[in-house]
Length: 134
Image (cartoon, helix red, strand yellow):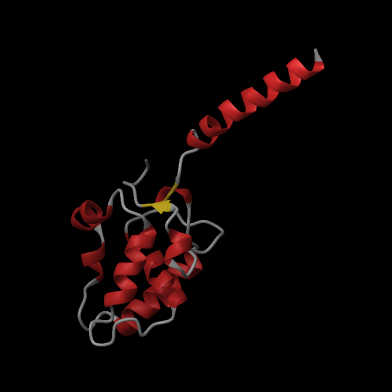
């Protein structure tokens, strides 16, 4: 009898485990994935490094969101860190790129939180870019 109960419990746990994991929503930019201080640092980096070629408005609003919604922050990190600055791609520190992305999130009015956006594409792959408030 105990063996039957144990096997039933094990079978249920084996069947239920994937569903409980699948039921968890992935983290999105709506989940406060950067800090206000990080966005402030990112703004300073952007102003010192990027404004010679780019206006901050390019990274906000409908066009920016249309291009990136559904993709991961890791994809955005890879794109920015491998192509910018245009005159010296990849020359910033990884955390500086993350700080600039935090600034982009602030520009798009995503909520700040208590943990910083990490400075690696791998760590950001689990964060999806989604429309504000979803």
